[in-house]
Amino acid sequence: MGKIIRQTRKERGLRLEDLADQNISPATISNIERGVSHVSKRKILYIMERLDLDESVIPKMLLQEKEQTDEILLKLMSIESLIDAKQLKKASFYLDKVKLNENHPLLAFHHYLKAKCLLAEEKYNRAEKLFFKAIQFEDLCPEQNIKSCSYNNLGYIFFYRNDLNRALYFTEKGIESFIDNKSGKSLWFMLYRNKAIYLERLGNLHASYQTILQVWDEKGDIEDSDTLLTLYWIRSEVSRKMGMYEEAIEFATRGIRIAAKNKVYYSLLTLWIVLGSVYMNLKEWESAETCLITARSLEENLPSHLVSQTNVYSRLSVLYMRIGKETQAFETIKKSIDASEKINNAPYLINDLLILANFHKKNGNLTNSIQQYKKALELCRKYNYEKKEKQVIYQMALCTMLSEENRITYLKELYALQKEFQIGYHQDPKDIF
Image: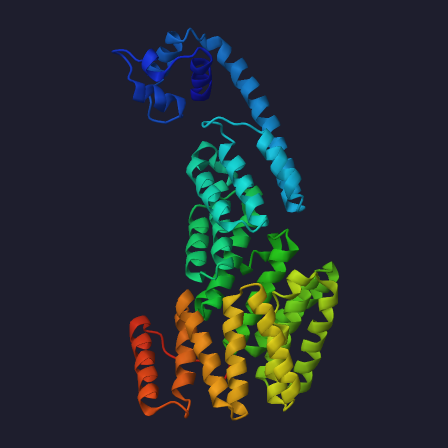
């Protein structure tokens, strides 16, 4: 009703002030046009009289408006399919052709699609602004879950910027604003999956595990195989890091079967990496090498940008160090560092630098070892990774090449972190993963 009133007023070239009088204010007319719920029906009928709008024609106008909106919605849905298919230029062209006024119920969806297109083009700053704009206009049509979708994508943006704390914050905002409906169920699983991943990367393993359990019993409702398989991956990885090796093997193996059946090679590769890492933890070196070599072989089925996002070389380098294959260890960790730097993946790069530092320390090259620790420490502080910072400081405090004064300094910093965040150091400092 409000939209029809506004449209009629605009068509007649009238301002809010032109319709206002002693019985109705410009603010009330604006509330009517924006669909504010507390406006009385009497006021609505009064402004309709002022515009010579017959109440009997409203149903017909509403029907016409719905038909037009449904037509635009179909266009926008088709554009979203083009974005998902990476036909970004074509999608952007069609988006620009769709012109919507500031009160259109699909305006938030329109802004969201523009932002999604920019995100796919890795234009993060522009995408961020448009996602916030979509959130601003979401109240025009809340049932589309645009606000929750936008927060989820803002989480991705800050994840790509290595700001895991803000990625987690926006993902939790997406969960808070999620509207439960059948069409949005896949989004709900995606939000919890992403939250679990960000928590795991931040070292909050218990919180990550609890997040996974919140949706695990309903995983049969997941339609997207990528989301389902990522849940299997994160559960097996967190279980491994928490020392629950039998559970880690169980869910990694189940995930491998599902990924193989559906030919989802990226998930297949990452699950083999987790399984290999479990066997490393169990010191079953032959089984570990079998799993990790399998993962590396699967790289042939993936595009190069996806290969660079895996940490198979990182895990292989640790395996080679532990079984005495020093040359292979050094070659593979250098490959892993190059891949992590190429995609600007700070968590992986920090792990790689720690592995290289340990490699140098093991071989008596303490100068190079300390250099790698310092690089890792700088990244931890840049991106506010408190738990990983503690691990790096602990390792540096153990370096015998450092002066007594420097070792004491690092131990004091470690104590300050422990006290500030009230988190005990439970991990074996030799275990990079």
